[in-house]
Length: 202
Image (cartoon, rainbow, N blue to C red):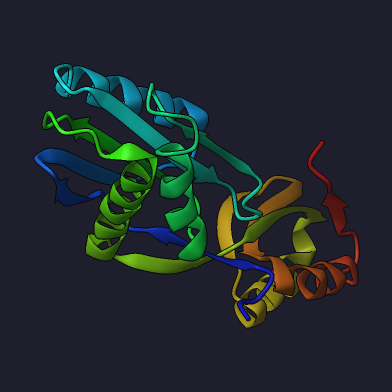
């Protein structure tokens, strides 16, 4: 069972190819973070493979894996996007877009044949990918007066959050990033420092 604050994604783009009855299925797996990135990739690949019969895809976004979509791009409903998404799910991946381009070979595959082909092509692309586990991180901003800088820095040194930004004026502020499961301890310690105020992001 993976921890609540980790997720799996791919490092760089990868490709897989599957051929069935002269139909060629080219699968491209891409790491993505936003819908805009997905749209850009889709436009790029639709242009690149303008002569292909179908450019189908599925994506999954976010550590909670709640933002996803499957598109059959003209293939019979449920025969392309769903099997691609199925592969993303069975590998528990997110922040990923898989595009499968189909060049029709003149022989119809039937719905079950299509499902197998799209699934196999997506599986090939995932198999070629480097999968990494990332942590779900959260940020916290703490404001404090300059004399208490050492107290704050001691906590940062011990808890090891990443320092995103810091300003030192009469009133100092520091934005820290740490994995979700360690955030409550970090916040509790920061809150104990004299003059410290935690600023919650609106």
